[in-house]
Length: 353
Image (cartoon, rainbow, N blue to C red; front, side, top):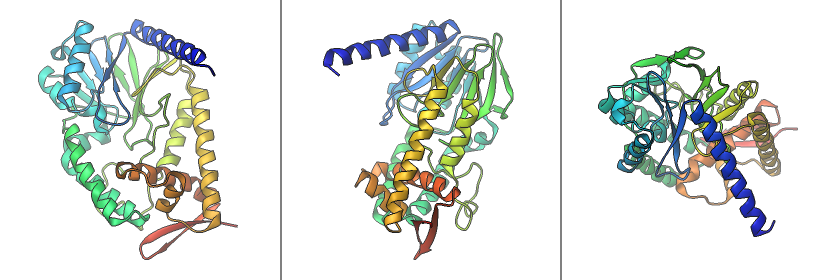
């Protein structure tokens, strides 16, 4: 492809994105792209101009995010103090970090999936439990102790981007969130996180998908402590959460939906969710086959598999890559094409047959 062809494609993609955003705006839903300090880049909050005036997600707890959010609201003729309902899509800090400040300034209700409420209210202690869970998973699957220690320090440094917030309006899976001019169907779609929630504007066939489905990247199904679990409840010999299998089941449910437009938590709108989900499924199965080839050569820990696939990644990416490997190994285990053995506290996987 020539440089001119590439530029033309970029222009066409931008024009298509703007047209999709205009369609959403005509339906009363406005994207507010808020900066984050993370590699994923900006996070999409969505202002729904309805009664109550509703903001879905908020961005991370930072002065820069707050300033840009205020500017974006002002461009639409609103202030933070005008917000009447804050909706939290899931437990990741780039999506809810500002919720406490916004709720305090506006007096807005805060709505989130009911099991997520306790997590958000006790954010500090809950993230302590998350870090302890992640440490046990990493050590059990071969990540060296010094890397684990470094990752815990990184995680502790990131915590300030989130903040505890009280959920005043708990939501049930399948329930309706009624606004004046629309009804949003609340749908639990776990996988990327245990609390992933999407919101369907049924009349307009628009889905607010948060990180459940993103156009330009595949959402990483992170190995996470089950919501509400206590120390010991999610440790061996308890079964390891199967984040990727859970995520693929959630994607199947979304694939079956009749949608005109998907508004994701990052990046551009999606107009053909079925093709995108099928593409994701093919990618996951290809990755599983590649891992099967590695463990057919010799038994390997998840960390050793990750090193074979990506080399020595940055410390900050070690848990992401471990989660991805374990997710694809789970596909092989479910199909009976792999087995696991533990020796000296470290699990290794091998091909069967």
